[in-house]
Image (cartoon, rainbow, N blue to C red; front, side, top):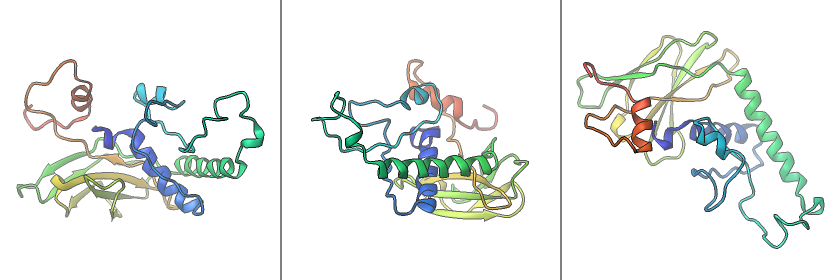
Length: 211
């Protein structure tokens, strides 16, 4: 999938929403890049291997003491550390209680010029229901939620060319899975063999019938 819909971004959106629900006094500012400019973190190797990874960090560093032998416990903000721990616990706990994310997502245009798309996905055994999500391409998080009480299909009322759609599973007690993004279409023209972005697209795209 495109980087904006990759597993790390979806995990970040999940942490953003979940942390806000369970720890509302702790302001989380999502930064949709691998890390700070010219910096790296412990999560970077996971992302390089294709796994989801994110980190919580104070973005305003003090280079007069940080990364130096003089950076000791006297300078640790334990309230901040506790809030990060609470947020991490809420994310891990919610994911553990939630069903698995839906798989085998597909979409088909209903001969409508792109204004009506039929979304389908495989059934998740422990899911009581599903939710279809939609956001415009420039929105950092999902703006619309459509409940799907039964079945594994949905006719999206939004213009898919203008945004991104995803599906998540919901347990009987309301725990939500990570969102699975509807993959983009496969390219119809030849792609560069040395292009990382093209290789990622080909691995995750949906092929048109007959291709």
